Length: 558
Ligand code: AHR
Image (cartoon, rainbow, N blue to C red; front, side, top):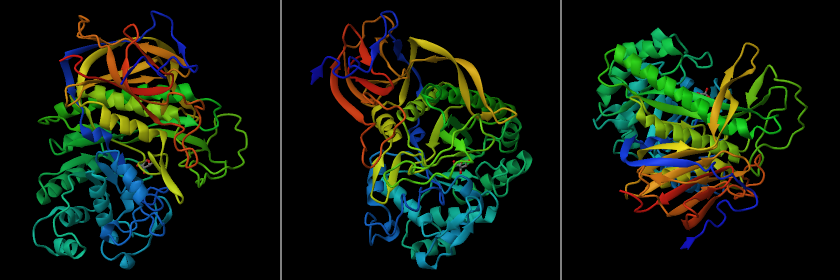
C-alpha cells in the first residue's frame, strides 16, 4: 500500500513548520558508528516493590493466573503474554534496594515451606513464594535472559546461588535444584555484584575502598564457579568510587552500572517540555560517565574498559510527602485523592509509584534510547539498559486485578526492540531547536530545589540504524507539543539515494491530552499506528507533534 502522508502530519493538531525549518538528517550509509547491543532493551523487576511481582507478574489468587505448571504456577498469563511480545532483553531481579537484604535460599523449594520475612528495605512482608526458580522459569517463558543481582554482603551466599543455578557438577545444591524440578542448569549469564552499595538506603552500604575489595573477591570466586558469566559492578557512586572500583578490579568486570532518573513534579500544571528535554541531561550523564570509565580503566591497566549497564532509569513523578500516600487505581494509575495545593518546592518529596505514564514520558524514554544508540561511538558504550520497572510501578505493563494493559512506554520499547536496526549509521541533523534551562533529573541544590542548565533542545531527535535485512531505519522523536516538523532525509551526502517511500510506524500521533496515560477502560489512548508504505511529499515526511516514529527505508541505499 502506498499513500501520501495520511495522518502523518497534515492533521489539525499540527502546525507545519515554515519552509527552511525542515529537519534534515544527512545519513552516511557507508559509515558505521557501532553496534547497538540487544541488551539495551532490557528490563527490571524488584520484589516487594509496588506490584512488580506480587499482584503483577505473580498473582496466585487471580483467575488470570496459570495453574498446574510447576514454577510457572501462579504467574499472570496476560502479563506474561504482553512481556513475551516485547522481545525483552535481560531482566534484572530481585532488585534494586531489595537485593541488599535478600537471602536467595529463602525462595527455593516447596512454596508452602518457605519463610515469610520482614523486608527491611521497603518495609513490607516478603512471602518468598516467588523465588529463583519462579523468576528463571518466567524469564524462559517470556524469552528473556535473566540478570540476577546478589547483595554483595556474603561471598559464600553469592557463590552458592551461582552453583545452584549454573553448575553441572553433582553437588548438594545442584541436587536440590533437580529435586525442585530443574535437572539442567539454568545457565544465568548476567550477575550483578550488589546494588547502589554507596547509598545509606542499602543494607550493608560501605565505602568505595571496601566495596571495591568486596567486588574483587566476588568476581574472582564467582568466575571460578562459572567462568563464562558477565559480571556487573556498582559503577557510579561519584568519581572516586568509580576510580577505586576500577583500580581494584582490573579486567575483572564486564559492565559497571549507572543509575539515573529524570524528575517531574506531580503538582506542576504542565511540565511536558521539561520531561521530554531531560533525555539530554541523561545523555550528558552517560557521556560523562563513559569518559570517566574509559579514563579510569586506562589508568588501571584494563585490557579493555567495561561497558555501561544503565540498569536503573526512568522519569520519576514526585510529589510532596504531605500528600496522602498514592494508591493503585483498579482501572490503572493512581486512585483519586484530595490533594492540597503546593505553594512552592516542598522540602520532602516522594516518588508516586502509581502515576500513569504519559506521552511525555514515552518521548523522554525514546530520547534515552537514542542516547544509548549514540553511545556506541564511545570506547565505553551503554551495552545494557533496564528501566524502572517492567510491570507496574510506572512501568511498561500495568496489571490490575481486572486485567493488564500496555502503558505509553510499552509502545516505545516494542517499536524500538523490533523495528530499529542494530548498526548505528553516521548521521547529522540540521533542524529546529529551542534553547531552555533543562532540569538535571533528581539533582538538587542546598535547599532541595531542582537544578537546571541551559541547553539547545532539538525538536527532532533522529537515530538512524541499519537492520539485518539491509533496510535503513530512522527513529524520529518530535518533541514539539503542537508543531509538525518535516523530515527531509538525505542519504550519502550526494543526495543520489534520497528516499521517496518509507514504511511508517508511529506512537503518539493524535493524542490530545498530554497529561493522560492509558488505563483498563481506555487502553489505546496512546497507541502504535501502523501506516504502511508512505510516499514522501516534496522529499519530506511530516512528523506529527509529540510523537515517536520509525521510518523503514527498504532498498533505499546500500
Ligand atoms: O525506584 C527503584 C529503586 O531506586 C531501586 O530499588 C533502587 O536501586 C533505586 O534507588
